Length: 348
Ligand code: SAH
View 1 (cartoon, rainbow, N blue to C red):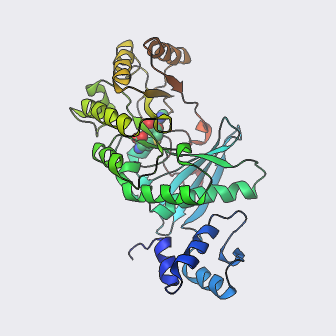
View 2 (view 1 turned 90 degrees about the vertical axis):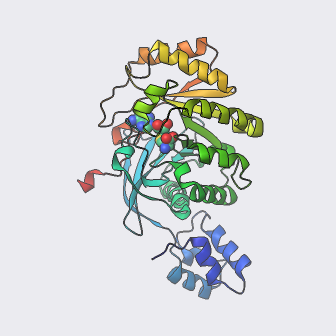
View 3 (view 1 turned 90 degrees about the horizontal axis):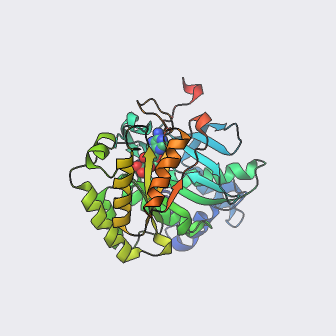
């Protein structure tokens, strides 16, 4: 059966009063303490009953939720109507709020050598509703748990390559920005760097002003190709060109650009690699580097020792690069970057 989005279903349900009713219904989806259509008291009873029959309240069913030992990270395995499963993560952030890490696809076609999701291959892209419902899932989870605080940030850093699912990600972003108090500068879309889509978003009036993070992982073309197989000969110079255009078109504090760099012992953590990265980041202009020490997956990689991470960072900083180091969260429950594979102890 062809997929029909919730917004379309709502529109066809109220042909005579579409704008008003469908807007009311859509807003109700994000109201606190509303668990289903029957709770939406603003709607007449007959309308509530009709909605309950015809429009699923959510596109995702909870399969399992696990909590990290530090109690600051939760990972949920959720299932879509067709049985597809993805993982989504809730993390406490430094400002006392919560960050949701969203999946954009079931699996991923990019096959980055160090990433557990890449090993699954791609089953399908998620619909906009399925991405929005990951946020709603965690909103409901926080309300029904004893954990205080609100969701303040979103990162599209779960399973999948968001820009390989451009239209649905855009639609999900616009819905989230319209119906929650999470502003676009608190949302980051992380991409392996699909250049045609990066070009597209520069001129796309409907692409919201969210932040972008680009998974660089090496400024050496051969090393990058080895670990990010979708890379190609002139990817790096082309990315540099794009970055300059981006900074001219959208470059201000809201749009600062981040290069992510998963640090792999002996692969991309040498002095030469640090120098190449510094040259690239400086040539790119106002970009910062986010170093992500490797989280264990089944791959043949290792995380550098802490001293190695510090040395790498110091070398970049010595060359004028702004660097942050991502703290691994939830690695004891395989919820850290690159560990999402939608397998759960109860499945095995
Ligand atoms: N497809 C998107 C989102 C991937 S997940 C992208 O490529 O950006 C977000 C980040 O985690 C990416 O930078 C990704 O390269 C990184 N990552 C993947 N596997 C990892 C691992 N095992 N350890 C640390 N970071 C990892």
